[in-house]
Length: 84
Image (tube, rainbow, N blue to C red; front, side, top):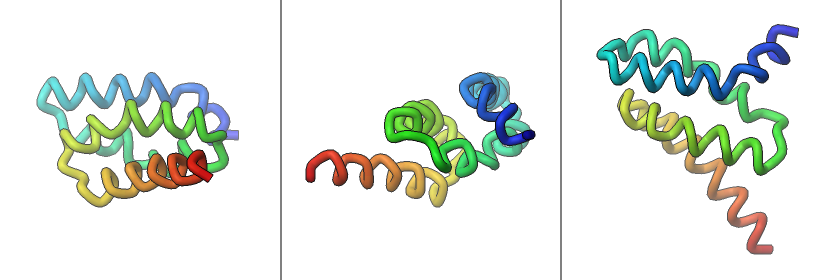
């Protein structure tokens, strides 16, 4: 049930993380976006793309290179799938 509730607020969490990062609170922003892989798991391609596109600037701002690569990989897989 908790995952369902959080899914409803993913966009708000990303927006809040962006604000926290801008306000100079990167630790809080990082904690907020840490569960991002769960946010895209099991979602349709469009929803995954929307989440990742909003999230990548925050991940870059937090210098979470591994997460940026993972998020970009989700998009690359979708593009490859669309090309088939």
